[in-house]
Image (cartoon, rainbow, N blue to C red; front, top):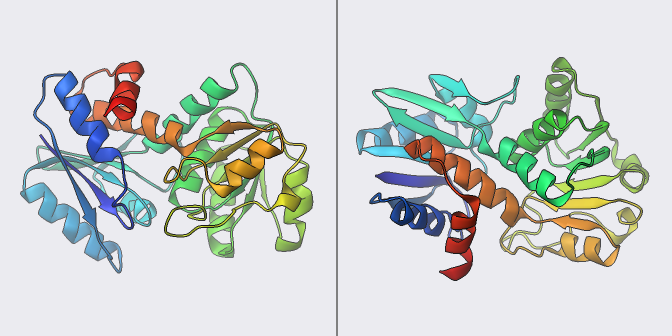
Length: 274
């Protein structure tokens, strides 16, 4: 079974290790290739997906910066509540391209593991691109009290706000001069930007924004302990790492590709022991 990942700055991705390990555990011969590509527009992405389909790929993961572009390129969408507007898992089957978003459900599982029985409360999200959209809809499904959105691209945050409100979520956007006060008044902080990635180091939340919250999540997992999470740990917050999101989204992607139900303990062992 041929699988792959399409994105940028993905050379340290753990996806090949995860999917080939799961293939061995469940009796499948799996290959997993990385396609680190600069594609200028949705048409270029569509052409790349078409080529890979013709080459016999069964499924693809899609990551930054192509998740939003992938939304309009599939024939069918599954497990995508409302106008989520981003996909990270594509399956080729009988000439049909099906898309889903396992970031959304993967985040929900990671949150419930870290905060069992607790509502997310008031949550501040930085970044309203592909992964930010998935996490926002995940928080809506978890019945978060309120979702605050901040992005340097005003059109992106306004579109996500409209889509969340259309689904009944309680959400609002935050102006740049209100970020610190809003963050300090929240229960949870989410980094859904690339800041903190090994190619774009830095702290997505400043020391002034930390303190008084209950939990923190960073979608970046290379490295796992980003500068943001180090600061959040110092401020006494419960941490949810990007590794947990990666694990659960990967499990659900593999299930979509193969139809096999995965034991999370098996997946976790493959990443820690290999």
